[in-house]
Image (tube, rainbow, N blue to C red):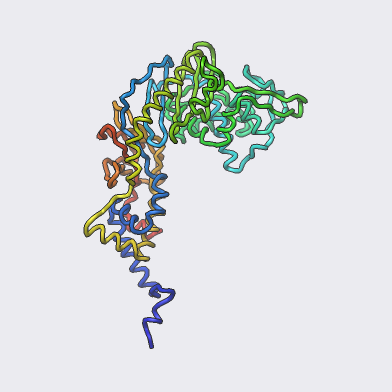
Length: 460
């Protein structure tokens, strides 16, 4: 009798359950002894493609490139520029100063509306009803009446384009029940987005006691809101006609307040010249105005914020910031091309690399590694903000992981990930890496500590 044939099934060893558990335990025991860099290396031989897809979700890239271009001067009390991809803060002026967000507050209102759509709680065609309190607001507004009904999509157009205060109030009250409950939801969500200096008291940004934010926080909120394609579509609309409602027979025409959709001297279409993707104004009077824009240049998103600016200066100040960001991106292009040739996975050579390469080809180790991948994803803290300034270095902030006993911070400059610091469970969920060099691109990820890792892996 051919025992070898009896032990084979579709080319795989038909081993006993007890034997399989022992081998899996051994593979896991070896796996948990690997450093994070070793795991990346082993994954290179096993499931590099899958890891490459997930790496972007756990590691954050930060550029420490410093441009030779002269930084612009702006009249705004607070201003900030962030470039996507490298998460580099290109320009910072009083980014943590407490200022009134004005109607840029409406970005949070629209973000929460879109989030409710995402969560399946409502659709863009859900009909909301204006309450008496929603209508009792100052201009700009649609002059909605109590009991007037309007679809969510039309309220969003009115809120983002015309900055209608009653439209924003109607969104908020219908989402949460009333003004107070919606403000609480706004503040909870702001904290979840990484905001540290923001408090909202209404859905529209009308000045009220206790309402404040910062350029940094408003940029985080704008980035979240502008990530929705529908929001981008709305912001790129110059004029929109809202259909008649249950109380009015006429259409309502709303026009954007975004100055990039107006002619400025020789620039007939600034939104085309500066490739504006989305934006929102905030206006109180000639001496207190804000403007947030999202532009694109060479595949990168540029986020700009000016707060407490002169009304006639917010557009030229924003133009200065966008042009400066474009110059920086142009200078970084050569550096970025070099970075694309590298990966976050470590390249292990010699005997150690041969071992991992061989392990990666075995079904048992792949099974163990797959388990590690799932557990690792659950125990990797999401980096909420990562930015660089020449004065402080790279500042990281992350969301806490439930049950974590602490955190290890890892960094790579294109090669292996190395642990550079640890943080306790009771410490601030933030770290400043002052040991970075200029003109580099670093990647970071935060791993939660879990105690006895072998027992933790085997328990899963």
